[in-house]
Amino acid sequence: MSLLFSPLALKNQTLSNRLVVSPMCQYSAVDGFANHWHLVHLGQFAAGKAALVIQEATAVSPEGRISHGDLGLWKDEQMLSFRDIVNFVHDQGSLIGIQLAHAGRKASTDKPWISRAQIAPDQKNGWQTVAPSPIPYHPQETQPRMLSKSQIQELVHAFRSAAVRAVEIGYDVIELHAAHGYLIHQFLSPLTNQRTDEYGGSFENRTRFLLEIISAVLPVVENRSLWIRISATDWADGGWDVLESIKLVEVVKTMGVEVVDVSSGGAVRHQQIMVKENYQVPFAQRIKEETGLLTGTVGLIKSAEVADRIIEQKKADIILIGRGFLQNPHLVLQFAHDLHVDIPWLPQYVRGRETF
Image (cartoon, rainbow, N blue to C red; front, side):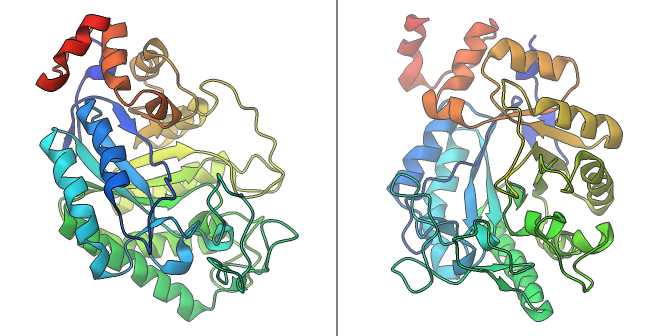
């Protein structure tokens, strides 16, 4: 039996296999509300037997969106638009997660197929961004407004409120987005956090915002699973690194975080990333070995054999894939075929087996 297709028991849920759909922004919402696109996009992965489908970065406040097309869960009225998605995924036997996020200084961009440029606050679909420190991501972008301590506390409450809504809707996994240069990561990295108060400077101060969010969210998660996504390294001199990631994971493990989803990069423009197949796996492996926390890995994992070997060699517990699922929404069925594993197909799709 392939270990890739072995179940993984969490505290309150069980993943039917180790293949998880990584959150992928679709930039197709209006005022944060989900629509038919999101239902079909996320539902197809559950129909293809992914163990867990994680919904794209979902903003906890309007200014926390990456673009004006991002999903949001900052008000009760948005909840209804997500219920059909959650119910459909559950009906197919898969779990569903939501990634709660705030983009910080990397917010207020256009949809990427139009332009990746930031939209100025006085332009249509643009707004004033916020950050730990008033440092723009790009020199030509609008300077973000430095968050006051009271505004930081408002955002902690915003994450908690969004988590309350997510639990009520029925999401199984709540993931906090602390990676890729977005707001929580901006607090973590000394390259983007130059504060001199209790939220800047030392490791303890730079991690304070995330730990306060975790403390606020955990009591409302109830019998769900709390995950965090981190960037293991900034790939830049003087930035957040894997040693600090290990130290952070050791802390959040004691708090009750169940899984760390390990990615990297995104904090600054000048990164020295050595991109290749499986390039992020060593980060997950080291964090898993050093902390013992359940660990997910990402990063151009393209074949069933490689994914299976990662699990077999205990380099990670979970494989998260993004682009591969965009290319083939039924990637799990393909991987099962490649590894000679028999898993059930939906009866409507059984004829597809004939193509293998």
